[in-house]
Length: 239
Length: 239
DNA sequence: AAGTTTAAATTGGTTAACCAGATTTGTATT
DNA sequence: AATACAAATCTGGTTAACCAATTTAAACTT
Image 1: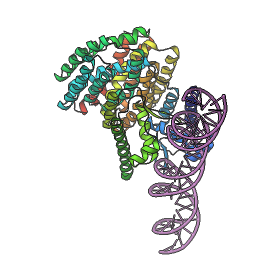
Image 2 (image 1 turned 45 degrees about the vertical axis):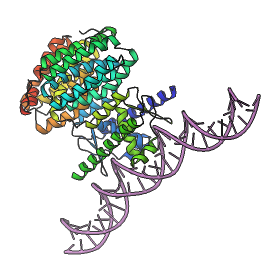
Image 3 (image 1 turned 30 degrees about the vertical axis):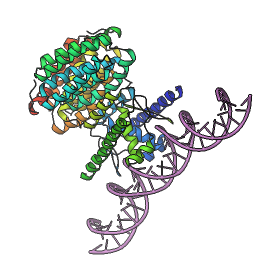
Image 4 (image 1 turned 180 degrees about the vertical axis):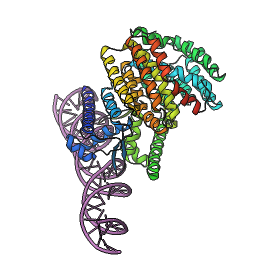
């Protein structure tokens, strides 16, 4: 087990190393947007790593949008200038794994917006999906079972109804980690789940009535305990 | 060029196809959290695709946290229940590429929060970084040059100072696409860049003075034109 | 028959060979 | 000398072979 963690962090170190070397190379050679990088084979030899490692690093930089690979042609610097590229290189290198508090903080922010957008943009189809998710949650709670997942699915249905694909994606990214942490630390007990039924219904009503103000308010109420978990047990200022 | 797009969408279709088949398999076999998936070789044969395709699909599902691969052992269903997994499978399959409006909308949301957090949590070190980014921007504008990138770097510095790694990551994800779109559609002209100098200074001052209210206000002012671009030219309700 | 040890098979990960398309280079033609 | 054409090279992507760790099966010991 310990070995696995070590090798994983080793791999990440290798990748970060390659990324920083790529940054240095770009600076040294004064490469500009649109210019072609040396080939993967050349880079792997130059850096003394496998071509796979180079490919993974490039793919990561592609994910963050600063590189662009074209088949049978080469890898190019995206259409952002040298300055932005350098800044982003450093930011990516400095990125750390998200802590739970950071996840919850972001979730609250996202959801107070998605619920508002959902109330403005929801279709009848969305409403059906929300109702279905809600029923599944209620049933689970009334059976006395754990309903963390059904809870999250209701919230994801809201994100879907917001018609903002970026926020939807972001919610999908943070959801699994939140679920596992919730279940690990037992953030919600059975009693809170029961209260949650009415809170969810209130949110649903607000979305149904296309009342953004109320939707946001109801969501805030629903997040009350989450707020406390995030800012009290975490021990931070802010309110 | 057209061919490239076609093959890319073909690849994405193949991947989505595999993901949906994986979902069906999990449901059919009633696999639960912690259970092991069939091996990659078996899946590739079963689905009639290459092992690489299967690996890529698994990696994507790993990115969204619903699978977990362990070397020399197997791929396992993450510690989220069947219901959540099914819901997320569908959501991932339904995910669409983000449009520009969705990106801007998300950016505004994120930044009104990060600037607030930055004003509360910034260290002296952060302040130095913000100052440096600011100077670089001012210099570029006063030289009459395009400063979109330096602008974005200042905003990324704010995200860094917010001490929220999740929001920081999200800002990094959406930044490149915003840059390219800005330059494509010429959202900011030279005059607005000039105005931006003072707006940036105001934001910087608020962060320096650790005044979250003011910080958010100044950022709102700075986003005024962006708001208009997003909601007027886009042609949407909301305000 | 139960427990222990050893060997074979299975696993995700890695490396190396291969592919098809794009690019460059060299050559012949005008 | 400029252009058209052809072959050799170079490219990212893909496939197949290989690896080391793990898991399972088998054999052996007590």
